[in-house]
Amino acid sequence: MVAPEGLIAHGRGECFDYLLGERTNHFALKAVEAAAALILTSRHPVISVNGNVAALVPEEVARLSEVSGAKVEVNLFYRTPEREMAVYEALKRAGVREVLGVNDATETIPELFSERRRVSKEGIYSADVVLLALEDGDRTEALVKMGKKVISVDLNPLSRTSQTSTITIVDNATRAFPTLVKAINSMRGRQDLEEVLRNYNNRSTLGEALRFISGRLLELS
Ligand code: PTJ
Image 1: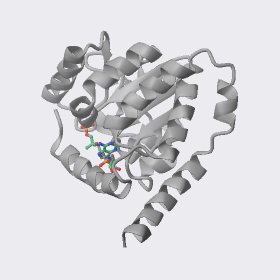
Image 2: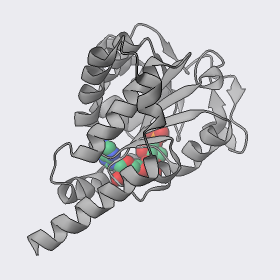
Image 3: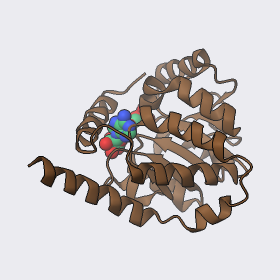
Image 4: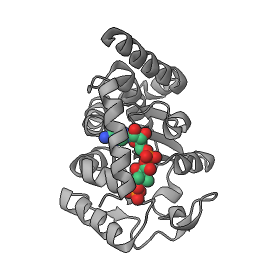
């Protein structure tokens, strides 16, 4: 399921997780609250799944899709029929009812080239909100340029995905997905969701993450 480059991405993430203390910090919780508000007020949310996400959190993707009504789409950077099928089957085994992006990736994301462009018309192409994790910066940026709101899960607050997303959850995907499921369940029906979104500032959340890492390194040294 995972591309060799995905293993490198995973290792990079582990390094940042050490710097973050391997726990969900206050800035991640703030981003999760905003992400839950955005998903609950969205018209057509979609969870974009690559090889790393399918390997790390397939059940959590199924649960998130169930509680939020978000569609699930396979979207691979290194797309091969074998990897497509492996990710599709992992999601199905985990309980995702409908998996888009395998036989129906007929639309294209402008500004991206070759196989990375292909997306489903019912999924990412028509989504207003896309949730992704461990994702490549070019693709995140292209989705934002298409007018999508992007929620990303990324342990590195300096990555281009983190820097260009609408909401960045700086946390391990294995902790962030279950936290987001809980937040959606507890915030459903709240009247102040728009206000939560208005008060959220991703720049300052990323700044908090960097200050946390810096403070932790000083403390440890
Ligand atoms: O499966 P494909 O073909 O779509 O390929 C996926 C690739 C390899 C293209 C994709 O994962 C990738 O390129 O990722 P990057 O650009 O290396 O970025 C991955 C980001 O995720 C880095 O900033 C890592 O620090 C971060 N990361 C790694 N592990 C985790 C993580 N973030 C959250 N949770 C993790 N467990």
